[in-house]
Image (cartoon, rainbow, N blue to C red; front, side, top):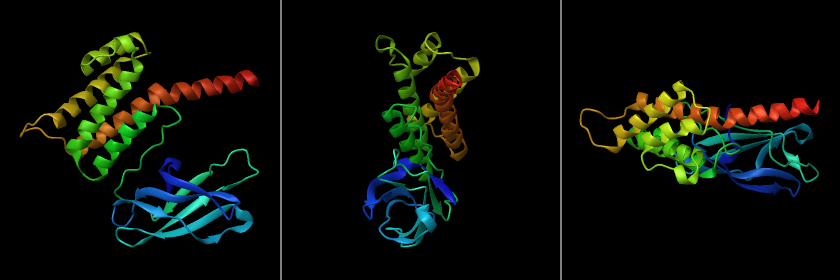
Length: 229
């Protein structure tokens, strides 16, 4: 089974006026690879003690069924109403699943990152490279103070050294994404982003998100827990 991000849920509802469950999910079909919206209207069965719900839904594009498993559904008496986990079966074999960074990064960065992934999964590697560069521009837009934001990405990367704990490997990584984006933005018949380059750029973007945003947040959370012991 493939784990899906809860951000793939387009609409939630109270099933039977009791359990908070997804009503529609936007993801890639494991059969045809099209990005579509699956509707989860009637459960195939619900497991004992309502610990999980299983839905089967046809793809609007190819009509093949996909199964969705909602684990740990919450009721109106629970303080937190989000599912514990959401899974799909069968798995998407050739589609790269998005990571959910919404807890850590500005919304517009998540949108830009997901747009790059859509391009990658549709095998448009030029658009992927351009999208990754645009996402990188967004990262440094938010890292720098308003008066220090640069129009030139190379300058912005260097300027960030004065505002974040910026080590040399990360500096080089950011410049690699910038250069890869330039390949997609400017026509050159001898140089064009391919699948390998596009995949590496997505990988590096995710490393930046995790180092700049996710890791510091998790460290602060751990410090708070330790202080409270």
